[in-house]
Image (cartoon, rainbow, N blue to C red):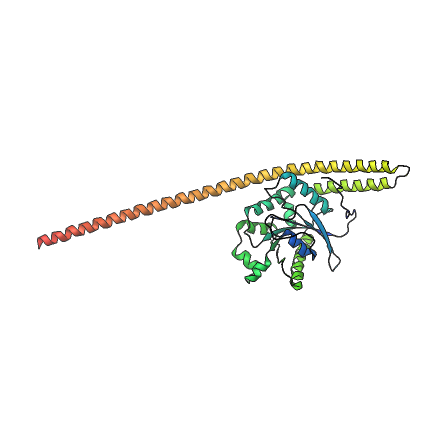
Length: 338
């Protein structure tokens, strides 16, 4: 991964911070949402379908009640167009930043775009990669609140009129936890209200999970390695009778050992990610094949129905013609008799 793997703000005792991770499709407004949560422009953000965030980044804020929030912005993780090596490296980086675990995963969607199959697949990828338990930590954040407000609509109105089945399933998976954000508003009351709504849902997630953040073996292994490196560095700094060059060489050896551990973990993540992606691509292909088959059957049924209607129309036209001919002959016969 290069460079020191431990950031300057690494802490090895619980500081009471809650960690929120922003995930979602490029262009949905993850960075802008992160800035709204932090109350300042910490993450680079602009209206772009190409995306601005190129690597995981952590920013911290302290709320009025002294609660510490660590917010991690991510690039398009679980984007099928991204290389597994890049995504794997970013996942490890994100886990490294999350320290003691993730308190809430904020899945950022936009009311400006329809919930896509790619977004559905991204949610499935999260569950496949981290396990179904991750759903218990998910909150859906819908951006574009200003658009709904312009149309005098609420989030409930939007979901009521335009909620595809995959989105309904996603809402069910995460316990219907969703909140609307307007990242363009300048109204301080509105900013405070939407943050309050989000933090309420974060508290619900924390309580539902017994106060325990999401962790797995990857979190534990990374934390264990980082703590070991920290302790070794502390021990080396306290050594006496060694030259500065010898101490520097010891630190370099420890850093190389830790980076080797990170490399192995990243390889495991990449392998798991490839398996997950392959499995989901197969599933999506099967679903698409089934959908095409159903559409073909429907078209064939429609064609058969159209053919039957055409034949019936032709039959009726022939019958009407024969009736008119019979009537004509009958009329001529009556005239001959007269």
